[in-house]
Length: 243
Image 1 (cartoon, rainbow, N blue to C red):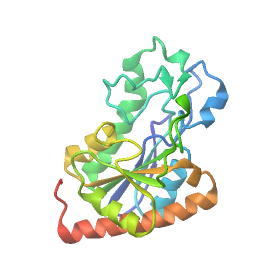
Image 2 (tube, rainbow, N blue to C red; image 1 turned 90 degrees about the vertical axis):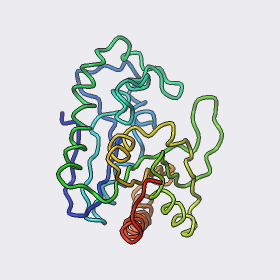
Image 3 (tube, rainbow, N blue to C red; image 1 turned 120 degrees about the vertical axis):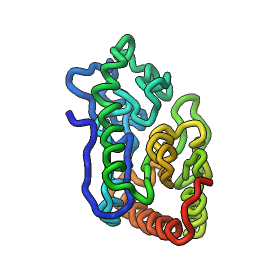
Image 4 (tube, rainbow, N blue to C red; image 1 turned 90 degrees about the horizontal axis):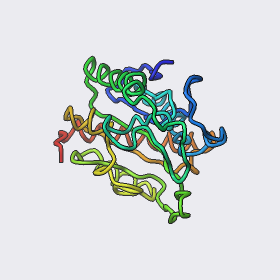
């Protein structure tokens, strides 16, 4: 299987979705109840549909992962302990014990990130947009409620994020500033392809109960398309320094 599904587009915005799929190749046995593949530990629910709708509305290229993060997490550095999870939000993944780490990286992680790097090299985008979704609360230990509708994550390059947060708040969206977790701690894809190339970016997290059906996807994709265009235009007017 190909490591990435690519949507073509002419806009100078590139959309990425690291956790778009819950697919597990037939030769990979995770040793889990198949019902787990419908949960957030296997896929960012709604994120692929929002990414595809954003790409269509913006006329932008998009790169979507085609393998579940239970096989390998594409939003982790290759040396991360969580790259091939043995447990995720309290769910054991026994089939990942003793796997050939280098083989999984070569088969899935490396080609996915190579496709992103090649796309950026061929036509440097003015803005990267990373689309993820998060749960209203973690399952493990019945975690606290997460009130945000959208979170915007960033590490060192906060220029686009700060514009995006302001625009979302003005639109009446309950917005998390580096919530429900911090991009300073978990930002691997954006660190590599955006910050590593000096490209501004929006790391977007959408609460998954808001995009679990077609109506929710349509609503949030339309709102985000407007926000992304406004961020892109604001960067063009004012320049895009790293901080």
